[in-house]
Length: 277
Ligand code: KIV
Image: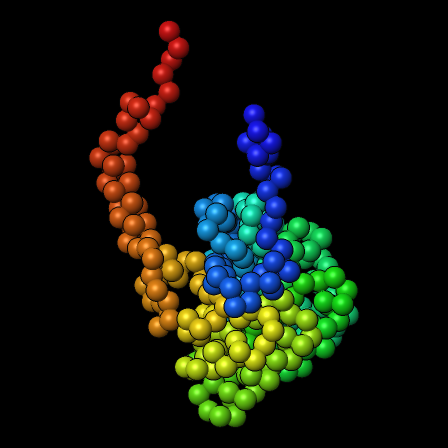
């Protein structure tokens, strides 16, 4: 048996944060979110990076926004995603309230995430005041992904989830935030929901890869919230392309199951244990 064939799964090398950084201007980086082991296992072969996003609050827990997501929730979901994946870089969102108060608190919470989950990096929504924290974390061994444009954790300040960068002032501010995150050592930056042209400008201006969501194909990679792209919800944002029809499939399966149970055609003989003869 060749060495290659006898290699156990555990010997597969995970993509690292420096690997992602090195993909600037290369083949587009493929990223999706996951919150559990089953989905992580299915998407892992196709992804360079899996984000355990705080979108888990809305996508899984039915919250109105990501503000209510806690560090313990993120750690629980990240542990499941790590168990389900072997290849992709796993990045964990730092939830609202876990990093804004200062670099030391951010480091303690980021260290908890890395130690308790085994994931290799964290993501911070990087407004102007967060660059110093990114510098502090990266200098101490925590790979950080930034996040500019629409920052969902700021929903209560901006009053909604609208696209950003539609005025000159806002465009300049978002570009400056991305440059600050890049200079502070971010290995990649998510650019979410920005008006045409801005993501391209940011991509040209920063040294690390940009990962777009609602930000045009001119970024170095793309990410989608997996339940959105699978069609799990009736409504999806304008920028989502649906690659599945899971809502309809789940409703259809549940309806057929209900019929079978009510007419006693399930379980049948094939699904019933027999007495040994
Ligand atoms: O929480 C999340 O899923 C995210 C993506 C939208 C990038 O931050």
